Image 1 (cartoon, one colour):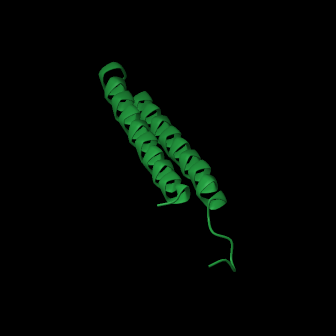
Image 2: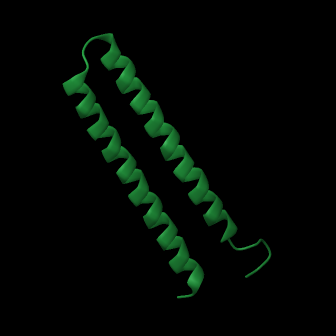
Length: 78
């Protein structure tokens, strides 16, 4: 096994770990908000946490995708 497949596995594993941490952070933030905030502010706070989670996840996917794209085999090579 050459270095490229090992590096791809490492990149995908790190991406999955970071996305898992983002989702855990979002759940903890929403739980904390439910304990502290009531009414319409709770809705907007949870909505903001949800949007922040989406943006961070998309950032991880874009950066990881760029790294994986740089490791691809060029066309025309066996």
